Structure formats: C-alpha cells, structure tokens
Length: 319
View 1 (spheres, one colour):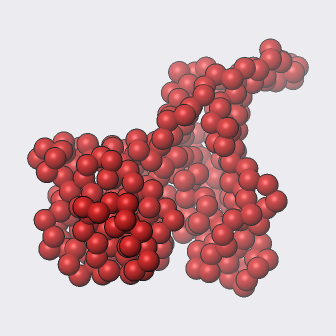
View 2 (cartoon, one colour; view 1 turned 90 degrees about the vertical axis):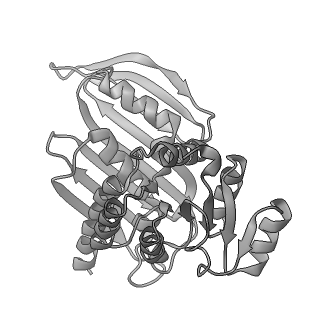
C-alpha cells in the first residue's frame, strides 16, 4: 500500500483532537473527522473544507479508510478501538489504551488476530530529547543508572472519571518502562482526594525494577506552577530534562566510593525544537504503509495499563 492510499478517519475533534486534525491533514491522509459537537465540526470544516464531516461513528466502519485515529475521552477508548479493529482498520488511539488491563490485553490480541496495527499515543517517547537521553544512558555516559524522577504538575483540568495518575502520568509510566526496559517488580503509590471523593488530584508513584533501578513520579493538577521535568540520576552523572524549555542539562556530579562529592560543573547538552506529535503520527503512517511494528504498539501499552491499574488498586485499598 502506498502512502497516498492510506486514509485516516479521526474520531474526536476536541482540544487535543484538533492537533491530530492538523497533523494528519498536513500529512495528506485525513479523510474524515467525527465529532458529536456540531460547533467543533463546523470549525474543522471551515479550516479543512475538503475533509468529510460526520457527527456519529456508524458510517466510519464501512468507509474506504485504512486507519482510524481515536482522540476521545479515555473511558471510550476501549469500545471504539475494539470496533475499529473488528472492522479490520489499523488503529491509532490516544493514551491510555484502556482503563483496565484486561481490556488493553484484549485489544492487543484483537489487533494481532486481525493483522491490524495498533499504536498508542505515548507522545513522550517520540520527543527527540527523550530519544537522546535514552541513547546517552545506553552508551554508559552517566555510568550505572540509579533512578528516574518525573514531575508533571500544573493547575490543570480536573477530571471526573480518571484520577491525576491516569490523566497526567500515562506518558511518564511509558517513559519509565521504555528507558529501563523492564516491568517493575514492586509498585507503591499514595494520593490525595482533595476536590472530589474517589478521584486523586495529587499522586506519588514509586516503581522498583528487577535490575535495581527506581522510578518516581509526582503527578498533580492541583499545583501552583507548571512543571514538567525528568531528572536522571546515574553513578557518574545526572541529567535534567526541562520539557517546557526543551533542554537537557548534564550535571557532572556524583558521589564516589569514598563518599566524596564530585562536581565538574554542568552544561546544556541537548536543545530540542522538533514537533513530537508530527514525528509520532508520521511514524504511524509509515508503519501502516510498511506494515511495521509501531514503537508504542499495543503490547507495550498493555504493560503501561497494567502498572496504572495496579497503582489504582493500591490507592483504592487505602481508602
């Protein structure tokens, strides 16, 4: 199949969905946009008059499109992705793949059975800075990896269904699993329900891995400052990735075997200005064209949902 033959129907034209509309359109593959909100559809039609507009999904499954992209609220992902896969469509679905591990596993299996591609929008994995950091660590430039620390904080949009971990931390859990290359052996989590019962607004997640690496995430939509930062601690150095400034700083600092502090200064070693969403969606189209396994495929997404579900169960047990 040539790239020109690949056509995508996008379900969901909300705040994030409009970004997908723009990128799929400029990639030359957007055939249709589906949304129940007539106002949203009119806005899409005004900017992209040659794109078919639908206010329901019933007509999508029989359309001559090879792929379906899903950018709807998280609770709808499983049902829409399952329907698309059963219709033999390749599927791109925004994070999380599903809200339950058994549903994610079912979707991954269904994709294999129907010879369809299933890719999940773990956007952080396509951020050039993260790719650079992963390679820098793998080359041994900071020695043995000790720990990863993620902060995803802001006065954000509170959700009524999924908590701050599910809403904000999916990308970070995917990053942890990708960089470490293992599933965690132990999960610990604490959270606070400040605004509404049953929904954590502020969550601390702690993962320990078989190889000895630890990973920590603080996710909150109830925070005074916007902070998106990854700190990497190694035996011979440390990295700080500021996601807002798009810089990676290498701190040539460590504590040696004599418990002496070593400080050889710091320097910005990477600046990124690429568009990760464009990279991510281009990758999806290339995979559709070449029938290649996506970097963030269904199987890797299952592992992410398993961690999140386990953490959620632990939070519920503490209520």
